[in-house]
Image (cartoon, rainbow, N blue to C red; front, side, top):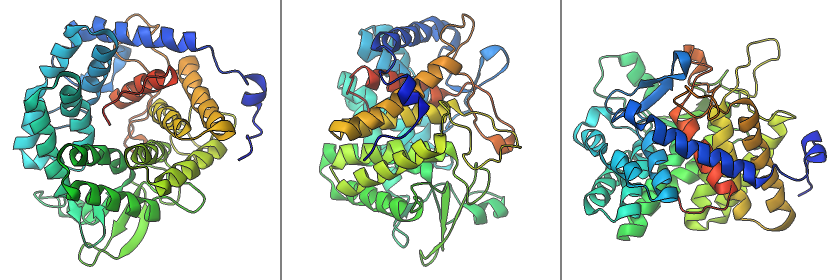
Length: 393
């Protein structure tokens, strides 16, 4: 593939010195240590006034991203304070296993970054058992008739309109949850874990990723027959648009699926998503919340999308060689540098999080905030930039 004609590559053909990424990573670890006494056992959900955290209710889908950062900090430093803080959150994850109404497709997000991380870092048998239980519960969400994992829960609610909306629906975010199933297959050799993960990934390739490498946020299937019906959005600008965080989830997810399986189709999908992302970014270094928003409408940035994209591009680059590997690493560097230039809060003394300008849910009025998932993937991207390869996916 030819390198893109972009002024960034002409003016900064040599990426930002790795020492700056190392310094940023050290600031991240210092921020996590400094905020432990303030955050305590709470789990950040979204930033508020003064760059202070609001915290999760039990079972929230974002509950594990702070835990994931603590485990990475423990890996980097060996400081048992990080390990203890992460392990002390175990009751929050036991709650999810014990309360079916809070469980959905995000079990992978939740348990990969907490229980799998704990097992890999400490060998704790209870953590392993919890992660395998979560994998079994995620497996049970598979809809054989359509070949996908049901995203949200269509039952157990008095809101029948919402139930009708969510039934038969898969979403881009779920590609990230497949890592828990691939891990469970490696741990147990039970084929169902791999079969379901592969089936959902293949359905995602066929229906969420368009021919031009852009993506739908959600896809709807007939709940009874499994027949594909239509692509839609939930958090993006419109049904036919390309919501940047959905694009990021799929890019990182397919690169990670390839790393887990060696399936060449997943690599090709990640390449297509990366090429579309490169084209849609233009000269920008931090993505807008939806790439299809007209110039004359509000265009808030989404630093979380940039962080996820950057981390995913480093995974993609590691799977390739030569000029193409360099191309995707340069784009990853560019996105990471954009976050450092425009969104970095690690140099702001009173901020509790790492990144500004996250767009949680623009259609719901949640813009320009710290987001724990943006922070987690920012830390992951910094580490991947510096050559770290041990993560919990």
